[in-house]
Image (cartoon, rainbow, N blue to C red; front, top):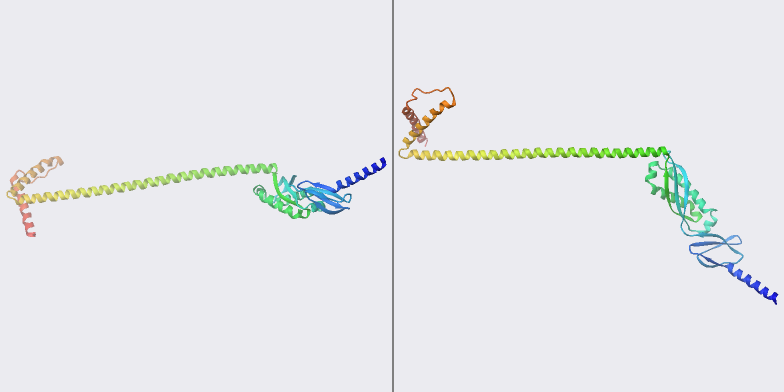
Length: 312
């Protein structure tokens, strides 16, 4: 009886073990490669899966998550023969578990070596200055080159990032001197531009000042000319009115006597001012004969009146 029970227990254990080996629970974002008698059979996806116990075996387990790993530092020579020490980080993802299992023996090692050789090749196409300026372009070219070669391995390169670019000490010192010289050059250019602009501003200010002064002088001359012209017109009008009044007065009764009296007064006043103008005085013979002088002036006045009457 005990032998029968032992046999039942043995058979039950074997059945349990067989069922257990035939049931596989694959975690999310993983893929298991199944081999049957040494040959590829299928790829198990996430979830509950069944295989044939003792015949099917799990040969490879791959994570479908994005993976990142460092690319070791290495030396590379640029187009202008400068040796650089450069490293980076690579982001990859398995897209075909079967190709990743049978297409390459060690996917990470193969991708790492491919990234290093591609990085050297891309750096050899550009100069030192372009290496620092075109990191994005350099990264994109490396990713493209890696994907072209790794497509048969079932691996996709998502992106590549250069972490550090270290030039030799002498090149770094030369670059620092170049940067300092460039900054000094920009400072001198800005200083000269400032001085030039200041001189231009001063010249424009002086020019405007001269223009304003000339315009002010012209305006002053115009105003003075207008004032003198108006003064001359006013004097001429006053003189004309005075002459008109004198002529009207002369035509009245006693006008000639008034003219004679006025001429006598002016004659006496003129002689009284002679000595004030100069020390040398020329006098006519009959200086003391005031009546003769007035009579002579009246005769001249009468002659002018007759000439005016004749002209009319």
